[in-house]
Length: 516
Image (cartoon, rainbow, N blue to C red; front, top):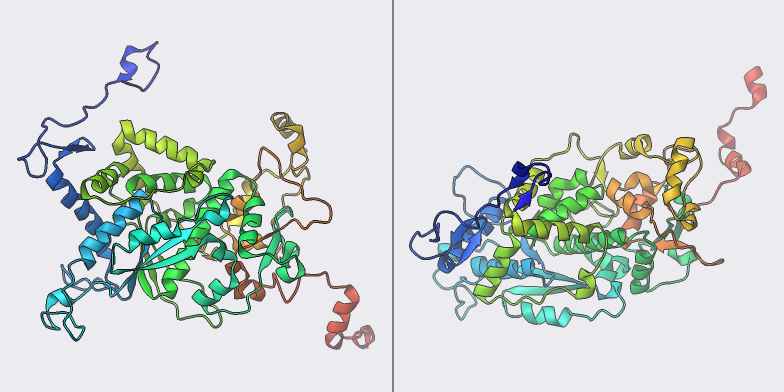
């Protein structure tokens, strides 16, 4: 029984639980065999369950395969590039790996002595949807001390599918200039750092690594994560770094489609978690997006990369049963990574508990978010997460944000904050917008909140003489920040007035000439 009100005061407040299955125990698909599993109160037998999951997969993927829809009602599937799969070792990505292989690669005809498919060059079965498939895996052990490296375990799983090519990545590659040169073609990109304790993320807090102590990529990664204020920010940062690494790798390998193994359950968790952290503007991108990197000097030709989640209609329960009945190997994620605290973990506990009693509500989350769309066009691409950025977001935030605790009515709010943390609050009356030369103007609302959110535990204070600058991902220092005047060959400095006058002296008119 579930309560919709106060059962002690109103007996009618109790809502009876819906039956686990419908009127019949027989399979709703074949109507012949007794059911073996119940999915949203519908009964399926073992023989009908696997085709049902594969049908949902193809229904979500195949309308987005062709670059152009054409006029035919049943067009021939042919992608414009390669296929890339994002693999984490979890349940959803393991199911994705198996279904893609069985659907598009396992039925390829054998090759003859000359290396050509048998059956004639014009035979319909020789036309492949994708010519090749890359599987990208991002190892995150560098972000956590003591976490084992599972790259070889992942490699052993992917080697069972001979049609797939394994592309290993490491999360510290986000701070490695050699990796960025490989995927983007840009060279001589400096590593920059930012002082997060400066209000507004102004450009005066940006520094070039050459002026700081040289850090290895793994040291820069841990320094970046340790500078973030909350556990939610750390979890969000790891997800963003992993996503951008896979996006650029897939694009550099000539892929036209990138598939993520997000099930309906994990997608609902991701949507709610993103919205609660200020990512409501990019809700549609969480479902499906067409991503293009920002053009830079010396970079490779741009192309549209379609990011699709073909398991978005398959629940976690269906994925688990599919893996059990079809013998799919699931390595699983490391316990230390799953133990990350924050909004993402709380949202996961809520949605998973909701799915046990009311599975239809989890589907309603994704269906509702699918109807959302922004009112205006994006003003650009966020430099940190590479998602569309809303226009006028900083002006809106300046109007709604409380930046002063000097008001008597707001002073009472300080009573619930520990005394050790009150010094971190801005008690000035300034509510001005960020300066023109600030990194704030190039970040989306979610990324800005990730870097500047207040922690109830206080902000760590750096020791005297030690730089408090946090290294930023290597793609932050690409051509854009130089053109926007945020960083140059070195750190920004204040130009004296005399130097400014000498620079423009030949363009000034003497006062005596004006009087004459």
